Length: 103
Image (tube, rainbow, N blue to C red; front, side, top):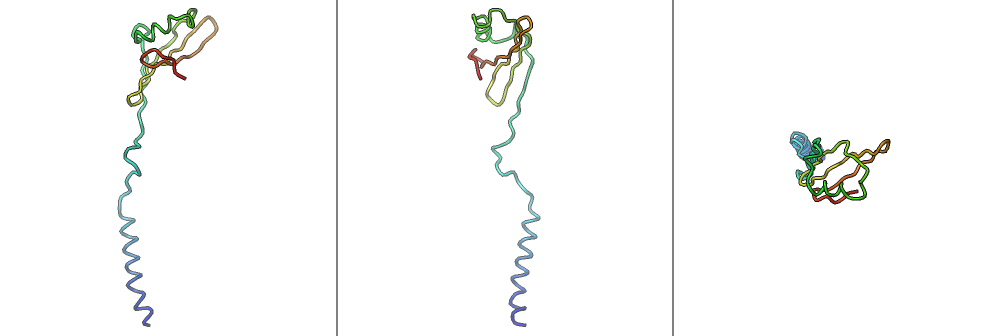
């Protein structure tokens, strides 16, 4: 009987402790890891930054024409994805805002 009376307070403490933990609302593990939104905007070739226009006028892209241009922005990073066409051939290149090719 003494063992039961001794165990009852520990049982009650355990019961209230688990009930209190379950009642708390969960919070995100890390508020700084919020999902970064990616924005893609179709851009007219005439509205591309001058640095990218100069890069596309280089010898590497002499026979290529712009089929489609997109501005991609994620947080503070801006890049431009350019779809090029040369007859039956197509390729896509990506530049940063300064006209440097990106992988």
